[in-house]
Image (cartoon, rainbow, N blue to C red; front, side):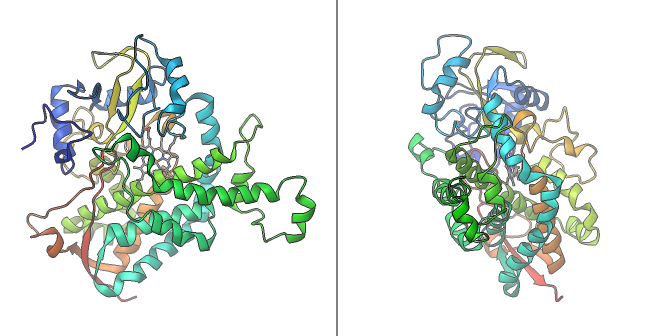
Length: 440
Ligand code: HEM
């Protein structure tokens, strides 16, 4: 039995399988609790979590991905380290991403990817969302079983982001292979581990696509490239990305664009895949819900909102206190890492009655924090909702009597599940299902 009092959230794999119990324990100490390691304060209360997310003056998202690893690269000697932190940004891993940037730089980066998520663009995604689902189901339906994480959710999320960005068909297989076994923010990770990342390879390929499009649209080359119109992806999504400008008319660098494209794979891949796995963990173990959703597909969106609240795929994120302040009655000194837990906030009984109960008819379930809040709210949330919704719809329409594989998850009364050892995600390692194919 893990001693929650002394456990290290960032190193203790024993906390992985049931983070809810650990967060409930922390919340029992108060909505804001100092942890025994790494100068971290955990926030498990709903209101306090919202407060941190909205307060960009005192809390920086510079460590949103890395949390306290490797920590602030200078000695903290004052109650306001805002300027020092900004100066240290180039030395901090992952501090140059849209989710970790702040102020004008953040809104500039966000403005470049915003056109990918307009209602019109999402509408155009409906056909690929459905066709990709059906094509992947075709690959395993004849077997009567599937490992949903590896054979469906993983490739589905990759292929949809590839579609979103307009990646040429021939590049998609490579992306699918690269992301196959990637797990972000592994527990016990060293700073060096943080730098090894499949997104680097994805970035290199994206760099090539975007650089080529910038080049062929360069004013000096236009007369030549016009002769080859069509061969250069005229008007495609990558071209629009390559030529996009910041709101003030200046142009992002190629590195900015590449990092943004690669980040979409990082942010939208495992989050979506593992949410879908959490969804089917519920569907496979609650026949009443399975029957209800199959008969009433219109209830799938309500199911998804309650799932996001009850067992979303993001477990935690980081913030760094850059100006000493008060939070939940505790003084938080500049330099302190905040363990921000979307998952814990979503089970705060002060906000959600009987939070450990899955209730599709819960009023205001949509107020969960699974997609964050404030400046860094998930820009991909509408797409993620559609990905999961279309997937559930198609899987239920084509697979009957979906159940856990006893060979992998044990007896139905007491199933067991393994989770990836990451501190960021609630990530089922595998979800082995059996089913009866429905003849169409
Ligand atoms: C179920 C799926 C998803 C979940 C649970 C999720 C969750 C989140 C959360 C909690 C944040 C805020 C992080 C913070 O404040 O530190 C975030 C940000 C972000 N997400 Fe998602 N996400 C999902 C899917 C996606 C998808 C499909 C995409 C794009 C293809 C995406 C792109 C982003 C981006 C770009 C940001 C950074 C926004 C910013 O900093 O302005 N996400 N996501």
